[in-house]
Length: 481
Image (cartoon, rainbow, N blue to C red):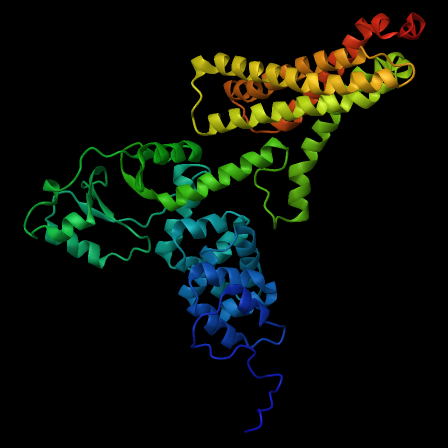
């Protein structure tokens, strides 16, 4: 049996780069700080773009920068397009410091909408530095996309699309399509007139199976929906969802085609809107991501923590007004959070259902009052059921404990029912009211809901206990303070 060959520290850690692509976790396990960068780059290049992105994300940032520098530009661009945005931005920043030329070439090879999305995270001088290493035509294209607001159709569209003159033949259109260098996976060609105005759309399959001599206008669909460049991205997502579009052209006020939005971009929008709404409800910054910097996280969260601090004092003031009652009947302090938490949870349930209805455009304004009333009724029934259970338990223990009357269980039951009714009413009406006032209904809604349900629960429970103090055996002297 031959002796195993000695390995030096300079020998590649990853062998057989020309073999089958390992999954990203296996590749990551084989990587150390003594990696052979060319060997690893060869492995990553053979992976599918999403797997390559995962592999680069799983290693040290400094190593990932070196690997990107060794990969061919197209493979690096494909991997970068599939990375999490904060990680991709961080890698570009490192490449700017080490090799701006490679950073520029990678961004240039990416789809225009993807590279534009990354460039928005940089200051203007850094943008200019990256753009200086690109072809003039690419620079014009990207600067045009950067001129649109990021949350609009113009800000997320790509200028990679097929267009042919409305007066050409099938053969001429086919030649133009063959000559076009399009990165996007397109299935349609848009017909435009002499000044670029949209006149129709034709499927590539129709062109392939039709004779070369017939005019394209005999095949095209003239009834075509298009969106304005200024359309909000959330409204754009609703258009795709409502009509099951795969692609939509983006036009200006003169109906000239500016670009297209594809369904994969819309899927990103829907996913982003969903996560942003979750973060907004609790007062976290909508733009914050897992890998956002410490400064960005503090900037997004601190203002809403101060709002929460202010709203919490309202509940504290309510409790303070019943100080004498609580000192006379200490068990009230034990039961207060139970009622407040139940009301808060019931309100959160109504809030979640209502927010979902607003996001999916399911709530009709004229039926909003009925929706709120139904949610309040649900709160009343659930409150009665929870109140009966908790009130019964309190009544049993109160009859055993000294200086406590079983009637306290009745007060708890009534308070629970009222508090849950209020919680569901506020949870369903708050987002509808915010939308009517042209505010984002998800913005810090949880903070305001908690403030209202806590204050209302304390006021209902302590107020009812105060009104029935004689019934509960609380002395008048204690109530007078």
